[in-house]
Length: 397
Ligand code: SF4
Ligand code: SF4
Image (cartoon, rainbow, N blue to C red; front, side):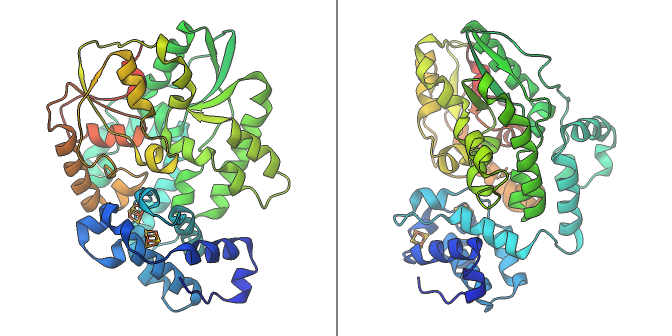
């Protein structure tokens, strides 16, 4: 694609990178075929090719931030378009640059909700306290927020465990408050394999929420906090392990997020290199895994942050089959379930539609269980079905 970005913008690291990404797009439109929002609206501007064009116009000063914002805010950042693109266009990175350029502020209800989410979700203690209160005032909350309040509030891990090897487990913010049993299951599973688990007492939000809301300052603060919390523990462990693929994909990106900060660049890159999704960590141990619920038929939903963001497709499936589960075929497995971080709160109509479509595909063969790999997908899907929705780690023993 031809670009004419202002010289002063291209002189910055962000501008140079945006220009590179824009020029790598050949405008073929293959990506539209796998974009969930394009499938819903049929509007070129709600597909990746149209959004890329709008972002180019934004940087060139030819489109107003308001016009770009409307279509960019509807993007799930699922990155299905990246998996499909034959030219390797880094759409997610480009969208993040555009969001930072526009900034996090919005007017009216959207602005209030975004600020509330940033304040609420990024702090596990605050989230836990307000989730407890939220149960009793759910009926007063807007529907999009009320559906996010968990029925029961969970705790973080009680303590460390010992083993001949050790991993540092990322507890996550929403994960430890709403699905804390996932990390407990992993700790028990690893203990049986003589692998100890430690946590970082000062671990905070990974920064993904602020990043996708376009708040660069808060994103970088979150990353610096976690680098300070995680790096000193690296020499005690074999790996940093994440059970929430949405957090893992962001921590794996810490090196590039901090590349321009000489005080943090090297340590951030080391933290990123040490971070594995739990499926990668267990990949070499499949012979030791058994099914906790033998005979159950499982429909597997691979989160976008796992299959598109981390490009880890097929790994969990292999481990579940090795443990003895029957995996059922699921149509359109590449499509997002509509959770997408804060999307279910900020874009509830499209989010609901995507969940309905996803549940229809997952339940087509009447599974006993739905399994997934990210807290957001798990709670979002569970809210729309009576079929149990579990993290795949909970299915193993
Ligand atoms: S992002 Fe990739 S698939 Fe989409 S229009 Fe550009 S080159 Fe084609
Ligand atoms: S990230 Fe997902 S929703 Fe956004 S343009 Fe790409 S495919 Fe469409």
